[in-house]
Image (cartoon, rainbow, N blue to C red; front, side, top):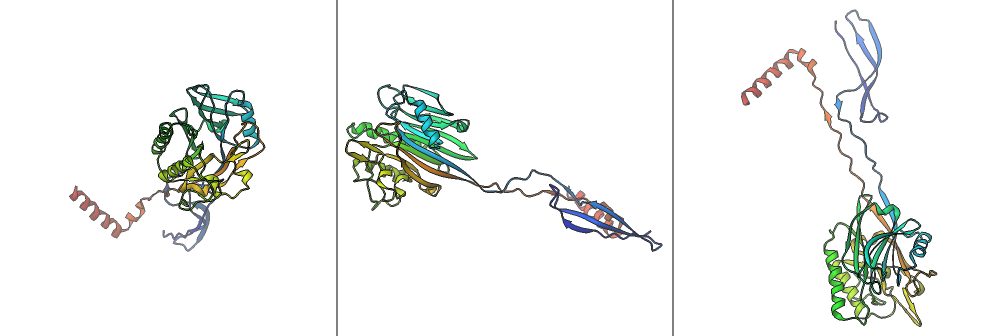
Length: 344
C-alpha cells in the first residue's frame, strides 16, 4: 500500500525549547484511492533544552557620597538617619577618630566599615546600606587615611575608596605617603572595574580647567593651591575625573567647607573618566548638621549592566533510518561505511 504524507509547519513560540512544530492535517492515501485525514501534532528532531535568559538591559541607580564627620563618637545614629533621609546608599567618611579595624551597625539599616590607629586624629571608613553588605568581596584597610571596599552589584565590580589627605600645614613627607598609598590602591584595581573615590583632599582644585580639561570641568571654587594641584596630578596619573566640577551649580552647592568667613571646596568625588557618563549628578547637600564644618557631597551613579548574550540552541540531528529502505540510499550508506572502516 502506497502512502503519501503532507505536513504543514508553523513557528510555535508558546512552547519553551521548540521553534518548529508540525501541526494540522496528515493526508494518507491507500491503494484503494480512499483518503483519510488525521489531526496530529509532532516535532522533528530532538532538541537540547536550555533555560532562556532575560535579554533586557539593566541599570542600577546608586547614591554615593563623602563627608568629613569630624568624629564618629556620638554621631552614628544621626549619620544613619541623614543617609536614610537623603537616600544615600554608600558614604565615605573621614576623620572618624575611632581606633580599631571593625564593622559596626550604626542604626537605620546601615553598617560602618572603619579603620583607625588613634582615637584623637584621622581615621577613615565606608558606610553601606544593609542590603549591600552581603555584596562586599574585599576590604583593604591600608592606613588611617586610606581604605577601600570592593563590591559586586548585579555582576558589576565597584570599588569604593575613602581618603583623608593631610592638611596644608602637615609635613611634605606625610603628604607624599598619602598619595603613594592611594596610588597603590588604584594600581591593585583591574582597569575594567568601576572606581569611586570619596575623599577630603584638603586642597582647592579651583575654578576653571584650562589645560586640565581631560580630568575636570570649570565649576570649582576660588583659586587652586598646591594641594589642589596634587589632586589634579593624581587624577591625570590614574585617568580619573573630578566629579564635583562637571555640574554647574550655585556656589552654595559647590562649597564643601565653611568656617568663619571661609567658604571653600576640599571634599571631592572622583570616578574613572571612562565611566563619567554614569554620573548623572553631583552636588553638595546643604541643611544638615551632622558635621560642624564640612558638608556632604553626593553623586548619583547609574551602573549599566551589560545584557547576557543568548547561547545558541543546540539541535541534535535525527537519524533518518527510513531512507535506507531506498536501494540507492542503502548503497551509498554501505560505501561510506566501508570507507570509514578502511580509514580506521
